[in-house]
Length: 59
Image 1 (tube, rainbow, N blue to C red):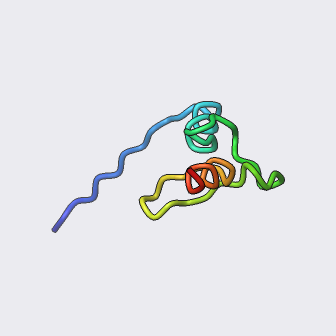
Image 2 (image 1 turned 90 degrees about the horizontal axis):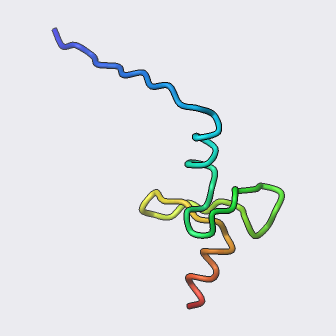
């Protein structure tokens, strides 16, 4: 019979917001209200805001 390993971690809500809900390129927080800062998921599973993605593509 196999066993299952489950690891629980504690994370501060502020740290979570800063890490997962912030564009790592421009350091702005993602926003569903703002056209520029909508998060976009890349095929590699990274995310960037729409504004940064448009800038990268046009460069």
